Length: 110
Image 1 (tube, rainbow, N blue to C red):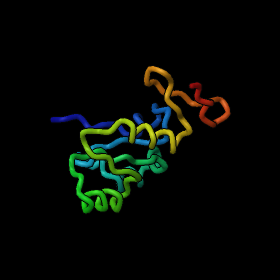
Image 2: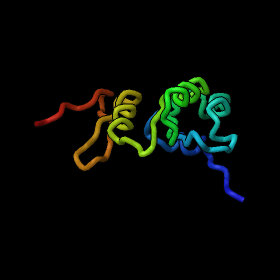
Image 3: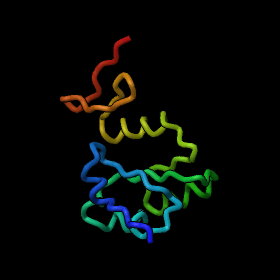
Image 4: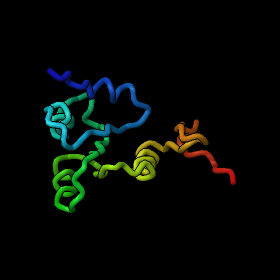
């Protein structure tokens, strides 16, 4: 029997105010409406990651409560833009992320 992911613990441990979820996940724990109803994950920005990329699929995902709809294979640049928007995070050289001390992205050097 598969184990149920603990999205509350994942969200609490994340430096970002978002949760990526597989839109095809059939567990109740991954359902956007369920996550919105849970106090620990109610404020999370939900990022649906799915293999379904038609406009109707996107509309259903957003209507279900996800804040973003990303299609597999995942465009990491798009994911990083979302992370930057929701958290003020910016990429460090080498691909790691950090948050600036004042809440704004640090200046980028050429």
